[in-house]
Image (tube, rainbow, N blue to C red; front, side):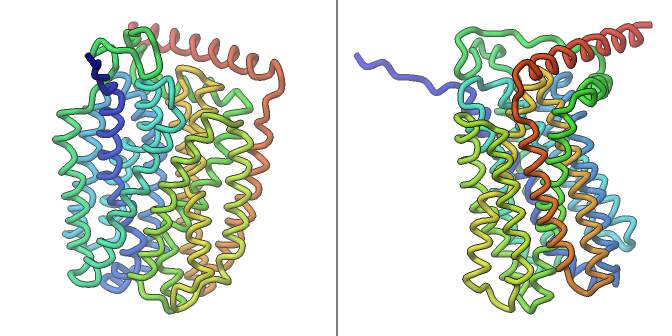
Length: 439
């Protein structure tokens, strides 16, 4: 009699996490399409609208390490459900706004906090708890969830804005985030041990360790310990440039930049959606490669290739989607967030069980870079009349990030020394926080 092999529950958790990430990613498609409609209706300068995006990107990053710690303390399900509700509120309430500060509150604060709690630290938490084998591949697939969300929503948002106005688009994004909440509450599990199963690729059921101290205290203590190590700053510096050259610049300003050259916004939005399509392929492939090759070399290659593509982008803009622009979309799309799987792997390698929280702080640096780029590129456009300088600076920074990544090359006992000092610092700060909390 043939024995039926049951699917490991880790795959079901990964599938629900993917859908949740897609639902939260709807907002990521919104700002680039809404920049000009908001400018036209309210008369706000592009720099003002971009500032709201910058607040969003900054909070998106700063929330991530605390969200990772909150997931350890209160559970993934509660944090993710609350995050999706915040995204829905922030997007839905924009239809009532009349002043720019309200845009900053809705886009920046509410959506920033919500999407930050659904950021890549969530990916690191899920893969760290549920997978031992195939971690890199699953990290790539879940990271691609954000790109899938962009792919699904961007053309839809552009058409809605064109045919029904920007308010209809904002409400659709809010509805999509809310629609995922019941699925998360029903199917998103916390730990393999809750089901009496080992993590995928493991042989023993391991009970989760009880959280030590408050979530905020743990996030801060992990940062304080990691900040004493050289690998943390190399990873954070490279990832800050990653954010500046993706979400901050291309994700926010590609559509208005193409429109400046006579391209229809729906066409430009379609090109950005194609970036998302090829990003899915590139990120999954990057996860597969991360399981097999040196993550430092992969990062160096990704950043260098991205820099080269951004340096040629200003010469590719035209009134229509020329073949050269399509080549850029394919090439750049494959590289968009391919940096995530090797960065998560390096955080886990250097910082062990605290790798998800450390990655949250590294991701905060990513969003800090994105916020600077979003505002900076808007200022460049307002002052100089085009985005050319912004593209050239981004290309040069990407090449610099390649150099930072290659400096991470393992040097014998240096890795174990770093791990030991990090573990000692984390342990002492955790004990100190627990002692002060009990007094």
